[in-house]
Amino acid sequence: QEFHNKLRVAIHKNKATHFAVRVDLPTVIKNAKEEFETAMDNDFNTPKAWAVIFGLISNLQREVWHLRRIDAKNLKKFLDKVFEIMNLDLQEIKIPKNVLELSEERELLRDSKQFIHADALRTKIKALGYEVEDTPYGSWLKPI
Image: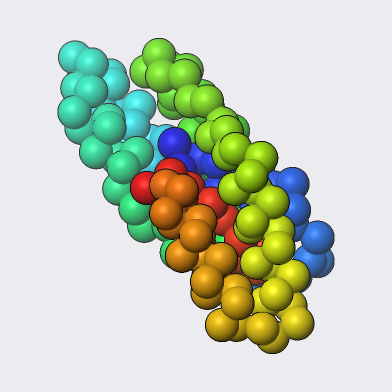
């Protein structure tokens, strides 16, 4: 679910026209789709099918912030179809308003190079049960 939500961010906040693409995502998606379909055609071998999807996600964890918007959209579309086939409904993570406000304040502190204060807010956010990951699109929050 976390990866799926990161894709949403990559799609909606990606304003750059060029990223250093480090993976041939169309080929990666094509291969994963073929492996997934082969597993499902093999007497619904769902453990193998899930292994393909988890392997895909695992391999792309570090790449998600470097994907072009179109590649992120295509990957999300593929994963949405897989999750539908597997009857898995992923909900977007809802972050409480006070945590979002702390994160926004932290981002402003980081922008003005007040890193000690920003780190203090990171600690406060963590105490509230959320981890902060810094991305090219700003802070990414996730439940601990």
